[in-house]
Image (cartoon, rainbow, N blue to C red; front, side, top):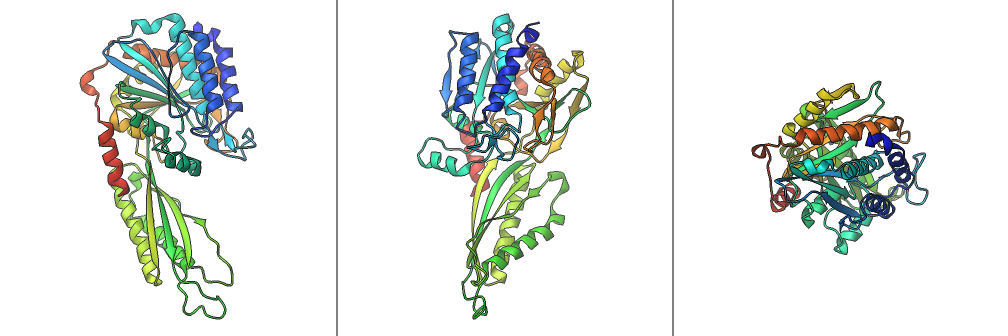
Length: 418
């Protein structure tokens, strides 16, 4: 009943966040909206701040486990979206605004009903910045100024110890596309990715008078692109490999043979080992293309996010709750996609799931993305999540959980980029 009573308030909070999109590590208005709501619900709330805009707060203490419900604060850079911020280009066309509202709906329900007091685990809410991997020049400045160490909000929080007392991580995320019936999704694994920058170096000469002694860097990059295209048949379909080379910068002139050009590409795979293998193949293609045309190439590798394999044991609680639920007709189970998220990094150190939910139309990250079923998003789905918490209560098997250290995570990332 409480979810029905608070529906209009939660829906309005979602709209407020949607109408005020902010890029990662800049979510100050969104942070204040969250703080205002939490303090309205619980004036004595204890809030821990981190990473410029991150917030952490708990219900319960001193219990055997701590479960974190994680909501992402940031928007996407999408200046052509119909509700983009005219100054920053930020737009909420990934659905994060609904995550935040859902988290607030759960906090309000659990606090006011006192339902959390019967749980045999602590429940921590973490509102985290910068899930989207973008606005990198700004984040480079933050890194240079030692304000952050990672582009992604979850790896940064991991380094800061925000997850040191967490045993289980639960995220939720909008499902792209429109569904005929209200749908949730479990066990949707995500790819990991890294960035490559290849700077081809040649020799500039007059394009008309003396092209003969030149070494054309643009041609090297073209040969590289062809090599990548021809190599695709050798890449395993099961790994959902994605490569997207683009020319990142050039000051070419039509009467001068270009002596440098930078090509950037992401590389997405479902496993770390195959990511390393394909990255080597890309590097070899770049080196060979430069060598074939008497040039040179420098290579820079930048880690993105790790692949995300959802914890099947934790997903069982979601399936059990769905089987008892009479409001949601459809569950999707076991999809695999090439999208990525920093939930993969967090899942390396502790078991995590990300529950998908419908209620939208348009394309994720597209100009036409918008929610169309707010009753499902802000009332029915949060009520379902409360059922998931009830299923977990008294039934968590510690033997089926795992824990790795931040140091182990750091070592793995360095092994990919070195």
